[in-house]
Image (tube, rainbow, N blue to C red; front, side, top):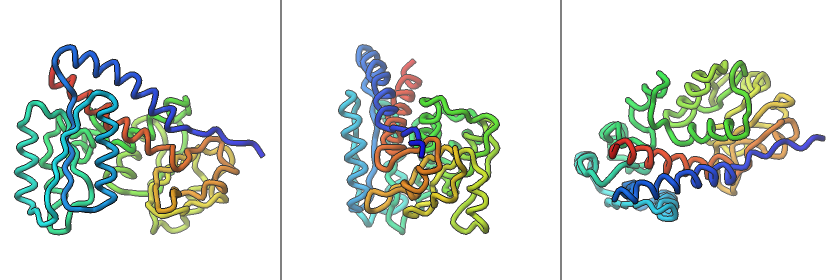
Length: 280
């Protein structure tokens, strides 16, 4: 049995961050510190951990992480007011609203309140549309990470059949558009797709983004397919049965250590991009 190419997200991430370090230094020499504002509403421990990880990643590169914590009972109007203040703050280059927010908040309204030039996480409706039309400056970070991994390992996209399992507005849908814009033929599936196995078996590229542990089975993978697992579930497992899928795949991302590290690096890259664009 041939061992598949391990698509090492840590390697890809380190390469991206090495380039970013030079760009941050150049901005610092102009008196500019790239700054990412993260908004955390409520006390969800997982969200707090994610925000802390993103803040640490910023600091390691010499970037500023501005953390805004708001109470669980925050209203939509209060959150919108905070976002507007950050939109108007010239020292802030990127804004990230940590998902999920408490149920009383209109999350879509909050996402869409973020100024497009600071939407470094690719969550606005306008950003989604720009991505579909292939001119988004800041596509959603996990889809951008998936494309960065494919490019890093020089894996062909054009002419390939990609099957994306998942349809979320910040993962499944945007990565489908990005693959389509790179001349792949794309099939979008989800947990309720009938005969899902038959669809996946046709894929040259499989993107697992359904949010269910080990949902994609090894026998579904066509021999030689490339598997990108964007899932992360309890127990450090992805959306694919790793061992089963690896038995058939030509290349595969591990979980953890695959798409995740690159997602954070893309968030940092978009923030640096924004700092450069806002300070030409």
